[in-house]
Amino acid sequence: MEVINHPIVFTLFGIIPVRDTVVYTWITMAGIVALVLILKLLKPNLLEYILEAIISILDDAMDVDDLHPYIPLLGSLLIFTFTANLISIFPQMKSPTADINTTIALALIVVFSVHIYGMMVKGVWPYLKDFASPIFLLPVELIGQFSRALSLAMRLFGNVLSGDLIVAIVFSIIPYLLPIALTAISMVSGILQAYVLTTLAALFISSAVEINIEDMKVKEKGKQRASIKEIYNKIRKEKTNGESKS
Amino acid sequence: MENLSPEVLIIIVTTIVCALAIVIGTMIPTWVEGQSAIKAIEGMARQPDAAPELRTAMIISLALLETASIYVLLVVLILLFANPLLTRFFGG
Image (cartoon, rainbow over all chains, first blue to last red; front, side, top):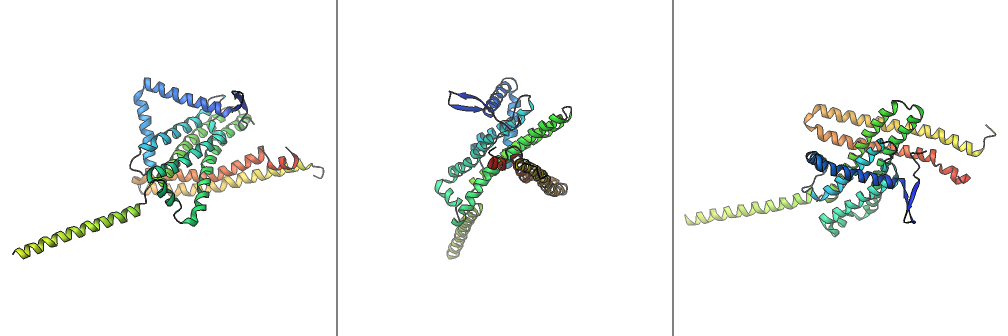
């Protein structure tokens, strides 16, 4: 079937085989760059509005103080998956995300960046200590990381592929009108999947970088208690001083 | 039925199993998704102030539940288009 097969189109430098997925990925990248340049020249306000919308999506999903370090990765993830899911509505184009290699690459980027951000924020040793805090749960955590990557990749791949596949099957049976509705459904599902992938990545990152709130609370409470004690001592000293003066 | 070759038998069994799998494997996740959507919409109707947060949580949990049926679809696609049994016993 044409949707599932990914033939090798040409070989780069005579040694590197290039599948059609890579070519479609290049076309997607070129489309994004061209669109951004055109918008920057003609409608800068629209570009700013789109960026603000992306940042507000990330702000809703993440629970961190400073959003700035995470915007480049998550925003480009959102823009790329959004465009790649939607590009199959053009004739003779296939979504790059309908190939499992692309989605596994994206999921590996997400899973490794979670740990890198966690190490950057908390420091390498404290992060690893937090990661394996009861040491006997370390294998479970590792399996969890692996299955997280697998489920991220499989979800995006399966959704996009099923949309394209259903459109292709219905098109081979009834080529009139009905594929339009299914294309609309697959577009909605593609937009939703881009949103879900970005939101899940944001959730993973914010759960990795969050400092344990209860520890902080205990520390702050200890500080407050100390300060209250100091104030109390001060008042008592003043009182005793006044009494002794009088 | 007696003079079927084993390859044809494997293909027939695979097709029937795929049909059953896709029916059951999409029916149950859809039912569960409906339950969670009902709860989320009830919550939104009760507390309209919390609607955006509920909507975000609902969409994420629906996508996570959807993963189950996507797995079923992937298994069915592998069985239909790249059947491991055929390649294992008959060399493709």
